[in-house]
Image 1: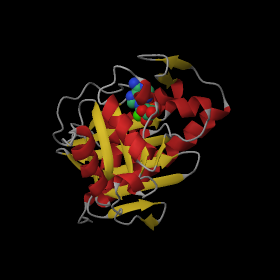
Image 2: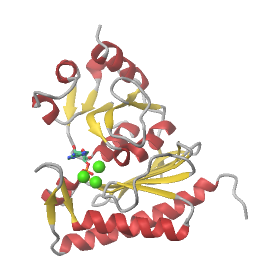
Image 3: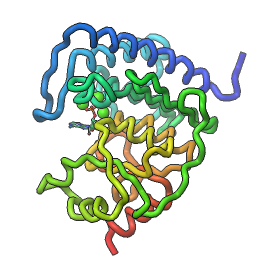
Image 4: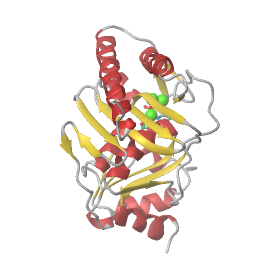
Length: 267
Ligand code: 2AM
Ligand code: CA
Ligand code: CA
Ligand code: CA
């Protein structure tokens, strides 16, 4: 049987793996696990991040030997191109929440083909909330189809932003972000970039800003946002690389252009 859109089938397989990985993560939370700092004391990794990434790596390479794999914990070799099918996976997004709250963290899985987003899955493990999209087929939360996101002005918007960026003297765009944070209706900080992107797609946040994210943080969110008319780029409005870290701005289209034009590029 050939399906018109093979990405629907790949998406179903990926969702089943995500549910299986989530069960293993919940089991791990009942025992003890090792926590280490990576680049700095706030940058945590646990055994569970690594074993979950390995679980996906083994699933992808055994079921789809021609596909490529990019994950935060470096299970696969470094990838320098997006040709063919690439799985971009963050096994646990929001590791600090995982360690400190045992709540509000996600598995993020994006599948891209020749650089085009095909499948996006963001799964809030403890809340059992699955955000899911296949290119051209719409985006869903659980079984509910997400609507096209509505536009909003800056002063009627609630935006996700990490407060740390505003007190970091050397942070780029600090002054611009300070002005934005003053002007918006409210700011929120959930500690999981993937969930914040899912919330923008679901209309729970109007926008999300970060000064440094990597492809695994936003790959799945990019696929979700494309299905609901959201815009996701660097903070300066450029296309995201999917291979290198960058700044990030995701929002409804009018808020996105207002932030780029009036705050980042400056009037
Ligand atoms: P992580 O939990 O997978 O590391 C926290 O504000 C958000 O930023 C999380 O989604 C976190 O992903 C992400 N992040 C990206 N780079 C980070 C870093 N160097 N240190 C901490 N969080 C980082
Ligand atoms: Ca991390
Ligand atoms: Ca992450
Ligand atoms: Ca992670």
